[in-house]
Length: 114
Image 1: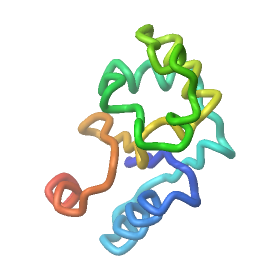
Image 2: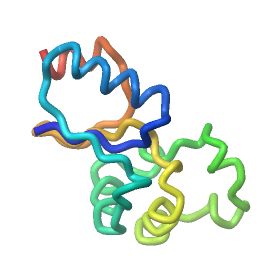
Image 3: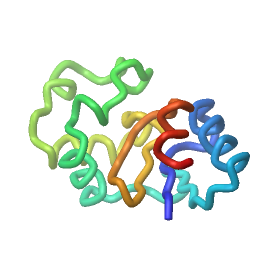
């Protein structure tokens, strides 16, 4: 089963969900604003992807952080920050049988799912 984590008003998440529906691929969508993340989940993602790949440094949420928050190196501290501000992770975040992936790229998804 494919689980897509994101926020419902994110354009990239909308594109990804629409693509999955068009391909008749079964998935579960989790709006992280309605179903909050746990620190354990985010630590798992960090272990799979690393902070550089998981954190969306182009987001408004990231730009609003103070310099001390941007310098976090510890997975637990980063996870706590993402749990409190879920718009900090790159979306969509997908968990499937192949692992954890972020972002939507149609050609990559075609290779992965078709």
